[in-house]
Image (cartoon, rainbow, N blue to C red; front, side, top):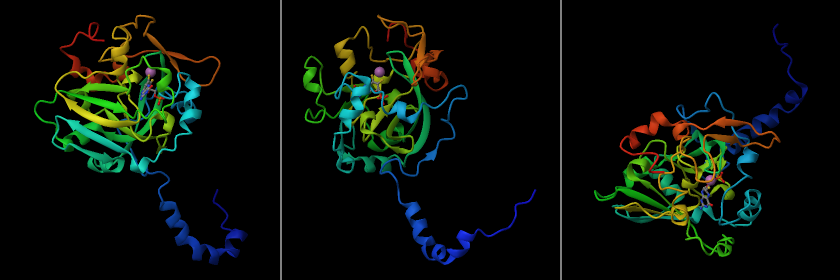
Length: 308
Ligand SMILES: Nc1nc2c(c(=O)[nH]1)N[C@H]1C(S)=C(S)[C@@H](COP(=O)(O)O)O[C@H]1N2
Ligand SMILES: [Mo]
């Protein structure tokens, strides 16, 4: 069946208006909707795993771990939304064993890394829940190439902002060694998968998810994916991290997702797929969260049962 070729009355009557404003409308369409997630191309490699669904945006952006705001999953977003973040003037200090010791804006880091792309990653929290998220960001490897760590550098430490006027829950947790810190070995940091995310679901990162930029290390438990980064330091030994200082027997430095290594208080063999239903589905947990092909070589000389 062919389509009837009838000019719609509305279009006909308004043709001149369309012609007059067409260009303006087109230009409006080109204006970026976001500052940092902009026109990211979708990765052709890191696409939706065929056995999984994308987590609903509303779930991934309202069920959060961000202790500086709240210990309650649904308590983070309402508090974070009161943060009047000026993402354009955010600075990230690069320090330690690196040539390019300087402080940069988010856009400067994005430019150095050659722009952002969208990657869909599995994300597994040590507590036993998981989600699948389209992140926008760049490979940390590309940035590290430009920052030029010195020959002595073996590790990278990351630090979150720690302004207690914004992160109001810090003062309720005085026993925690703030600021939130995390770390990776240099080869882990330079693995292609390690992402600095500036957005999710095609938008800038929401404040509750770690705006304006965070780490995403998809083969490790979620606590390694540190939020709202203000400092990246290259070191010559394994850096301190917040969770490892608090409970080293429960939260190791490596924190690789591993169904065979139980947390001292619960099994890690399976995980709850995050959604809003009353009967959430579970699935078996995969070694390295399903990224064995990409990262197993990093650990060929490491006893994964001892080095948790
Ligand atoms: N600064 C900071 N980063 C953090 C956390 C935190 O409490 N503070 N929580 C971690 C944990 S335990 C997880 S599971 C993820 C949660 O990220 P999401 O809220 O975007 O899902 O952030 C990680 N990064
Ligand atoms: Mo977590």
